[in-house]
Image (cartoon, rainbow, N blue to C red; front, side, top):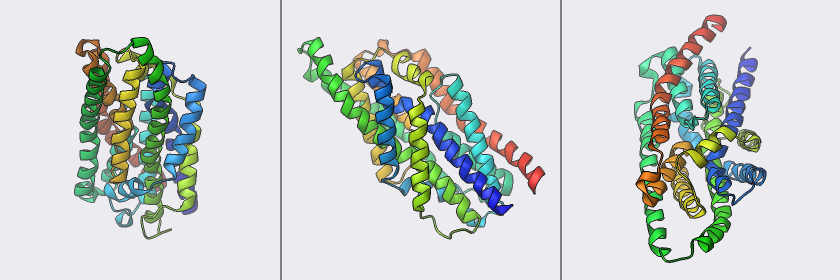
Length: 331
């Protein structure tokens, strides 16, 4: 039974990574597709390759996820906790994908893991300092991304104030190819590691290993699952990110991608998990505000923010309910 449960954990974690890939494809390519800098199929293929490369390059975020919420070695039913957390996170990702809402897979996973831990071992089992560090990174990074997008766009406006708009758009379409690659790479460095961290959490809880190091097979399988998911594409969220916040031109897409990718890669270097969805959406909002505040469709932005706010509470409750249901059957 233990082997079966562990295999189920790995399957669900890779499924979450796959869904995360197509759910968050928009993060990397929405602006470049909406400005026609890249054709959709080319953009998705490029994003898949760069996601894979980014995913196999770093492991610091995986260790933070694996030990930040709770100590897996101290939990009696760690594998069941992870199964409940993954089911909750996957369910929420699919719900928000269906309605085209760019919610956070990171918030969903953190909320689900915390909810399952609480349902299993109570509030005292949650690592308060660790989860606070994670939440701080998740909450502060969008503010930094908004500021970065605003400043970059403001600088570009000043520099290009007297330039020919046609030439500007033509030049920045080429630039967007580069920034989309950077964006996709940074997405892989942070998001794919979350599935790696949850698998290592289960391996430690099951006694298969006694440290938070990420095995090579975990790294490669998570990277591949993310890349395959990205290759499927998440067209509903691409439409929201690329067209419904404000009318994005190539120079705007360039600034948004540069600002958000810089924030994500910096967080990865610091071993901090961030929501790529939050970061990129915030950067787009910052760019739109610098372009013209009234150009931003704040009603759409408000609905996105509401989804951000409710994700953690909802996934905490969902995963707790799933844990109680599973434990009633298997424990």
